[in-house]
Every structure is written in structure tokens, then in C-alpha cells.
Image 1 (cartoon, rainbow, N blue to C red):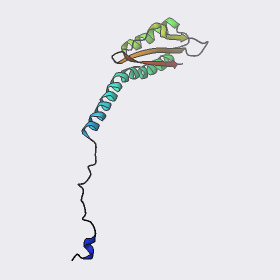
Image 2 (cartoon, one colour):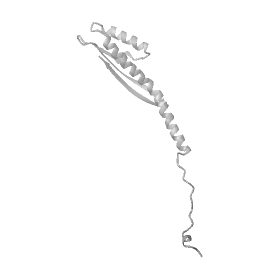
Image 3 (cartoon, rainbow, N blue to C red):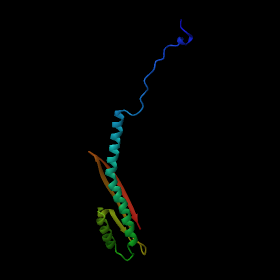
Image 4 (cartoon, rainbow, N blue to C red):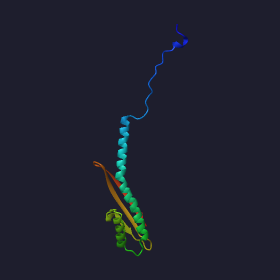
Length: 130
């Protein structure tokens, strides 16, 4: 005879479920990480140049006197830019003198950063020093 405890069906034990990420998941996230790092490596030099340019323009505007001519200010600015190895077309540099105050130097330019194949990123930068 069977006792009262044996009326239940026998227990089926399952193997423990695996938790974690699959090999394909690892590959997927690795590819995303590689693209993100490549994007940062390609874009950061443009931003570094911009941050340096902002400091140069501010310093040039502060150190220029109202007696300096626009051509002298442009020459001094270009000298600083060449030392920093920043190349900005002259058409993108605007220098305005107002009566007795410091000159206003505005630089507005675009950078095209090639990403992959025919995909590029257009970055627009503008800085004003006075």
C-alpha cells in the first residue's frame, strides 16, 4: 500500500537556468563599443582645437589695445594660431574695432570629419573674444 505522501506526482527537477549574456550579445556590445571609441577618436581633435582657439581669441582680444590696427591684430592672432597649429581660413576671422574698447574678434568656421566611407560629420564652431 501506498502511504499518504506518495499521492503526489514525483517532482521533476530542472537544471538551473543560466543567467548572463550570450556570445552574440558580447560581440554586439563589443562592436558598439568599438564604433563609439572610433567616433570619439575622430571627433575629439576638432573639439580640442576649438577649446584652444577660444583661449587664443580671448587672450588676443584682452591683450590688443585700442591703438592697434586691424591688420596688426590679425597678424598677432595668426601668429598665435600657427604656434598652436590651428588652421582657420582668413575669411572665417572677423575683427571689429569699437572706439575706445578692445576689439571684437569673431571666428566662425565648419569642420567636416569623415567617419566611414561616404558618411561625414559636419561640426560648426563659433567663438567671440572681446
